[in-house]
Length: 132
Image (tube, rainbow, N blue to C red):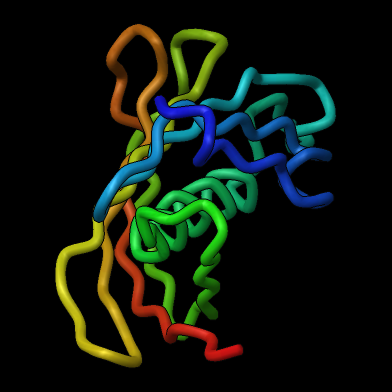
């Protein structure tokens, strides 16, 4: 990944432990090491963490500008999550793809796998670009 496009995590994502791995036109990939503070009372990663990771990678996928000095932001209008499995490994990878849209809104899809290849969750979303 070109380091010019690497962004420091915002406070919430930093608290969770998100790390940007790749970001390009219509695509974003983040990783998240599993940690105790992410667990629910059953000892599994909380579903809200999965939803946050899916939402984040989709938002970044739609906000690529190709210019590190020209940042684009967005707001989530709708987020749908399918919880499919529990992780078998200790590292989650979230990937997001912009799938369509126009001047003011875009659509995206995402998934979370662990390092064993286990498919953990899938998501879709609708986002609105923020104008400065």
